[in-house]
Image (cartoon, rainbow, N blue to C red; front, side, top):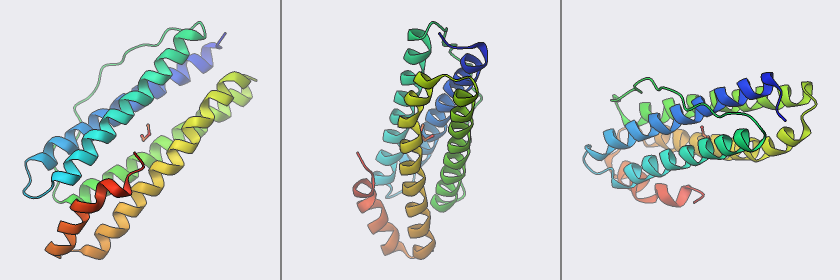
Length: 165
Ligand code: OFO
C-alpha cells in the first residue's frame, strides 16, 4: 500500500510525464511544418509516445498498489521555436528537470521505507540517464553545426540512429 505522501508524489510525476509528452508533441508538430526536418519530426513524435508510455507505467503502478492515479489537466505547451537548436535546448532543460523530479521521488521512497516503489523507480533513473545523454548529444551536435545547411541535413538524416529505439 502506498503512503499518502508517496501517492501524491507519484501522481505529480504522472503530470510531469504527461507534460513531457505534450511538449514533444508540440515540437513534432512545429518540426513537421519546417522544410527538411523529416527525421527530427519523427524523433519528436516518437519521444512524445515514449513519454506517454512512462506516464501509463506510473498510472498502472499507482493503481496496482492501492492508490488512484489522477489524470491531470494540461497547460498548453510551447508551440513554436526560433530554431531547431532552441527546441533541443528546451528539450534538454526539460529532461534535467524530469531527472530531478525522479531523484526526488527516489528520496521520498526511501524516507517512506517503500522499497517496492524504490525498486520500481530504478527503471526511471536509468531511463533519465539515457534521455539526458541523448539530449546532450543532440545539443552538442547542433552547436557544432551552427548555420551550416549540409550539417543540418545530415543531423536530420541521422537523428533516428542516435535514438535508442
Ligand atoms: Fe519520461 O523520460 Fe523524459 O521526460
